[in-house]
Length: 381
Image (tube, rainbow, N blue to C red; front, side, top):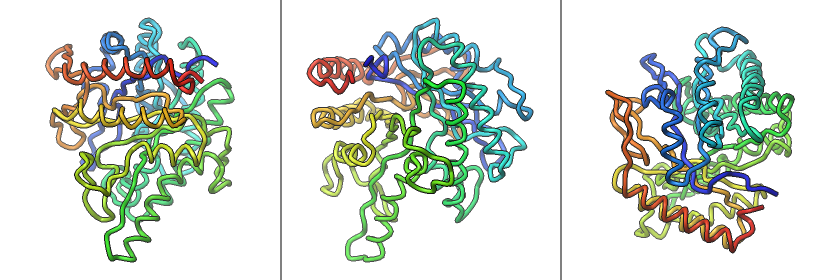
């Protein structure tokens, strides 16, 4: 079987398009000028051995009127991928949806499925090889932030379970629609992988932590048809498991993140979390998002890569690590400059710079996993 991805080291472009509480819609691809510098960005990443990326198709721009599609924002990006020989995993929903569409309504499910079907036709026509999609990014996080805690669009409270069901319903409908027109399409199902540790001497905390830990699997279980079968999920839809992992993904219940620097014995090795996921789903895994800000960027990548290497040597088919984001961007809420990528942007002009310490670590890890691939057939399976 040919390799799943063109490169083990990958990069993801932040492509959020949700509306903030003040009504302003984000468009991070436009804010960083990536939508107009796609080819240049892909070439820059290629110089560092990154030939597979995550990128986004912006639903709110493509479908301004119901079932009327304008691909002018997408075609230049699709063609840049083809010209540069870059493999792209396209996000179809990264938190944002068209104006006037009620996310709680049946119309949301139908519109998203229609958009996904239309997108699959266009992507397939413009792509060499099987198209790859993230149908819906982080169902679990959006359900928590937007449905339970009210800190994120649609700003609801105590409706997390209902929003998770609605997002899963739409995701599954979209996947079926894609398969109708692109039967060879591959799906990356990107969700946060977490670990919540109960507080000591608190029986209630033990129960709450257990619920949090089990809830991380619900979106994948729904898509696989293991949970809420009425949504239409099926094992055949559970394709590539996308694991989004950051320094705050292990935390105390109702408390702060557990330090990852080895100073706290409560921190569990990331390789163990990957093993638990693989034992549950038996699917190939991509570290679909990982990163940190400022000078810790190389150290965090080394930490994650060390654990991924352990997992691979234990027989877990981790197929890549995606730096996310790979391009710095303005903050969602305050427009602050977020120094979390390999590339940096200039708000005033079309320009890019490279964060050299992270580039050195990327190249070091790329060589490491190329060497490991020669000894671990799972990377080639």
